[in-house]
Image 1 (tube, rainbow, N blue to C red):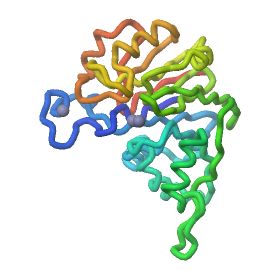
Image 2 (cartoon, rainbow, N blue to C red; image 1 turned 135 degrees about the vertical axis):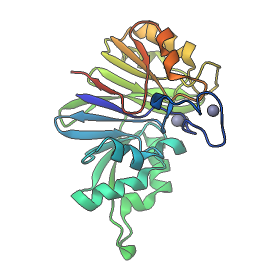
Image 3 (tube, protein in one colour; image 1 turned 90 degrees about the vertical axis):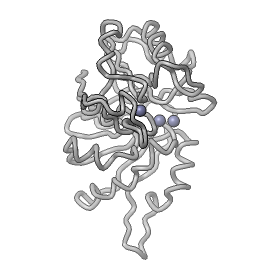
Image 4 (cartoon, rainbow, N blue to C red; image 1 turned 180 degrees about the vertical axis):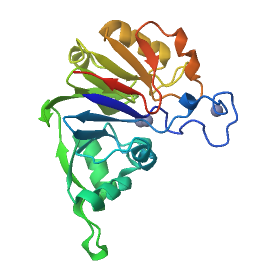
Length: 252
Ligand SMILES: [Zn+2]
Ligand SMILES: [Zn+2]
Ligand SMILES: [Zn+2]
């Protein structure tokens, strides 16, 4: 299984419009962050997590040939507003793709983007996604996927465990029952936002505390703001790194 970090940035992306800080003007390509998303490649199938605002750019950059399933973490704009970019894939493969989310997220998606789920025949617009509400482990293309309930401030969000890799973006609290589902991880990709605290996201200190509790083989901190200079990752504990756009990880 190969995981690619499509986007490692917070909702504004980095650089942020109008900002001229040291990170936004950094010449290190690893300080250029598009909106948070990953793609999981398993047995030639591609599972996309979220349709970020930057999906088109990410799909072109990583030469994604097709998408076979989409999993949504929550309905914030930075995670869903690239949904129309799935259209190009449909023009090529003409398939309706299964998508997965918990009930609340699916309700927002099907209301906000009803045409994606029903098509719009008068305009020649095809249905792109088929909704599947998930609240328990399921298998897709031979990969065992466990939805992990999280809290993002007061908003419920969903992390996903793919075999022994977990992607937990946009969270500030992991309930104890979810912690139990995150034991023996090979790779943990976790929201860490920035150094200063935030009510709806783990900051770096909070994320490192979760890493200490879960003890994955490798931890990757993502959804980063312009407070975080990639090169400062050398100060992170061994086995923990900052994510960057295009980073690839391999796991059984
Ligand atoms: Zn976000
Ligand atoms: Zn900045
Ligand atoms: Zn969010």
